[in-house]
Length: 262
Image (cartoon, rainbow, N blue to C red; front, top):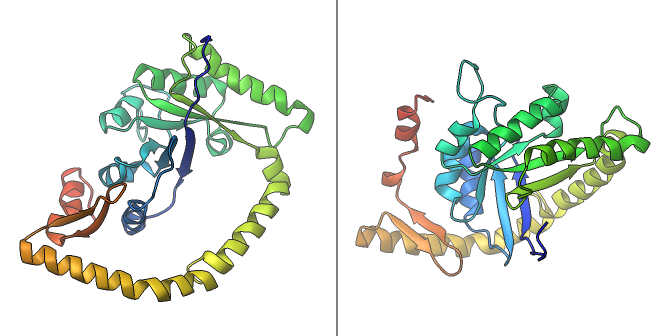
């Protein structure tokens, strides 16, 4: 261990899991371009693999883009797998390893997770290591379960360099028991009631802000079209997109070149 203690940034990650489509991704990317980031804070999002490039194009200047999973294998005859080397080749620097859903639904044990850590280290991928108790275990052996999961990483990171590793604790047992889920649902329901798309405060905010936003957008669009601009950025603090012409949207062409079709 270093004799000096270094303060790390606050790390906030959002895992989109297997959710969304192109419209969902584009809508949320446009929304997230307006995020204001606090000092010493690092933001990270993990979209499905097929949308990594889309998110990277829109958000790499604000967010770290993260894969949700990597293969335990290097390149080879492993149909359906995506290797750490391929993720790195996309320009993606982060991946999740050991998520509870991978452990539960895909039977990933410490042997598999250890191999994935080796692949991440080999190809210089930073990773979020998920650890948590076992839903089938008893509360008094949770510590031993988590200790075993952490030891998998300790054995692989020989040089004790944890600068590019984030540990994420998932309280699986408590969630299964409903202790946390009930409180989360209550909080989410309350938040939706007031701040969700159909919430009272959200609707009030929209009614007040939309006319102003529309007026600003029309003014920016008119100026851009008069001067022949295809992209207008807001550089007030972090960069955000105020207007872009449909002429510069090459998403379909890029996806077609990659072999994807609508």
